[in-house]
Image (cartoon, rainbow, N blue to C red; front, side, top):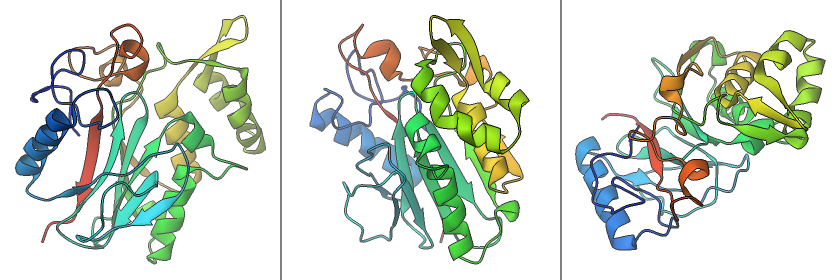
Length: 246
């Protein structure tokens, strides 16, 4: 997982910005991506993310810019990649079988339609490889935290039916804290953990919804679209990568 540090971009994208459509120059972004590839030692496939649930299988010949928010591979030498600047990156692997996957999870992608979001797409991908989600490992990257992610009733309602059907009212109360006037503080990483557990994932590491993981609050470490896009005129993008070694 990258941070905002270690690149060549000027303010407000300083300095490791990996997003081509962020307002930064394409030259800077490609140079930053080159720095990351040199550090990783494998090429990355960057997607056109649309806050959906579509998945894409990749290999070393897959071109960039294909539309998907979930990406997976069984091939060595190519990195599954998702970009984020407040949304949540989810990386998944199996400890023995050579299959890895990544998902870009904003609230729309997590909620999905009819209870089918990016987590359920990840689960289906694992099962398509003959794997049990209970044997897979999930890692959650940094995202906007529950003290900064203000949402409206529409977001609460997008998840409320699933929470009620699971008969888990306490989880609902913890994931959305009423702020007043129809606004709530939402726990994006907590929502992801809940959906991952419901999908059978038992090993979930990384973002535990504490302040250290909050992209909005940790300004020196993370890009944040909600914090910087309007106030500073632009926001950079970070990326999470997972790949199979040779």
